[in-house]
Length: 141
Image (cartoon, rainbow, N blue to C red; front, side, top):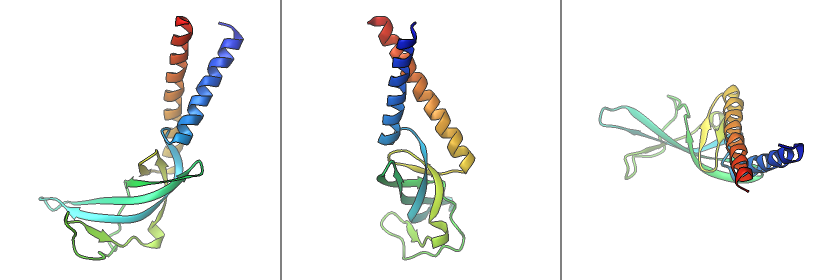
């Protein structure tokens, strides 16, 4: 394989990674803001929570579910349960901003070291897949 082909394949891989990042397919660190949290209880009276928030990636705003938010014991219910037997709880200002890992429609609250590790792993996997795909195409053509 010539150096020229290797550089062309590397360019294809970098372009695919850039498009995946901008499109929100590649997980990337972002500041996640929690807007609303809801609490419900199952039949065994275990507490479950669901939070919704927003984040910005590559100058685009996204919103959706935010996973792994630790609810405080002092968060107050705003009203009675809704039709799904969920209580909306007040999210204090100190608990609104989190560092997280995001894709197009979901956000996860994770420690900073995990953000970099997971982003690097996802990038390596996607880059390897692009490299393999371009190798297959070169052999056929």
